[in-house]
Length: 375
Image (cartoon, rainbow, N blue to C red; front, side):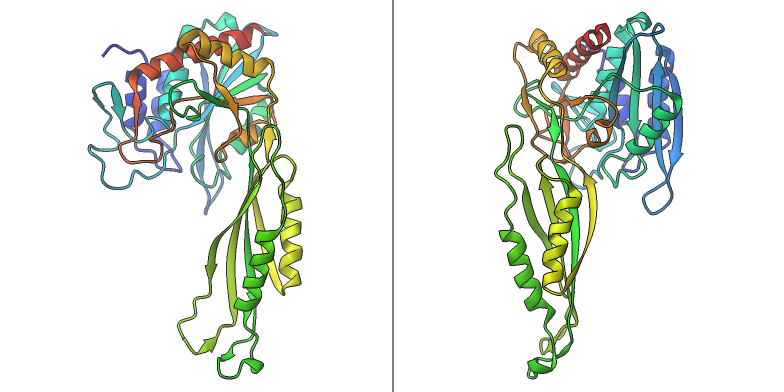
């Protein structure tokens, strides 16, 4: 099968890069970008437990005053797990499909970006690659550190395209113009342990936790907006760890996950949860993983839709569904939209991408970059 993108994708997949990725996969990407005239900056950031993390920023400068377009993504992958038909890091083409961990999420997209960049002359404008080794993990020392680096060297794109697998049923049917925010909150209720036959001498924290969680689940959030689905609060864990059947425990724990739209902020939701927790004698500890954001439909989304239509004859739906991505950080730099391959097999065993889709995606990325640089 003749494909410009396939050898690039195979080379990246062949580098084991379970998050946090480092070393070999970055060597491979640098080896692809260097001959195209990109100045490659690699650095590690962070300490244990979430670091160190390797990141890469590569830039090929255009004429003075030219526009700057950024390709963004990650080379780390989730653990492959068991039960693969082949070896997850030994890329294999069977029929029209390329199999391997990262084929869809998102080494295939990065290979398409590199192929697109190879077709654009330097005089078209400034191109950059914003690549982290820790998107699938905590993301503490990844794209956020890349943003600091880009600001320090004065290289801020006018537009950024993230290559996450956004397509659903066929390549090109969906792009992401925003994402809901995400926060996790840990609840703890202290009680007084005691014998179940003498409840008046104890204080059962489970009872108070159950009432607290019922109030939290009943807490009104919203009905959604024009571009976002309704926010939702889910109880993802309850634990006591009580080995004895005749003992009222001393404490009980729970964990909440809230996915929220742009009617809220993470801090505001955290305060609401904290107030209810304290009302029932509990405490709440929160981590905000990202705020909701929206790149309103306009020139950038139209540019991507035009490129998809020119190559595939369809126009992608603009959506904010799904989980979070590093676009939640990059939106602080400039308008950002996500567009990439079909996501049906991402994070699954026997992850695979259609080879023709890789080449079509490269052509779409090339159209997008060319039009974005032209202004």
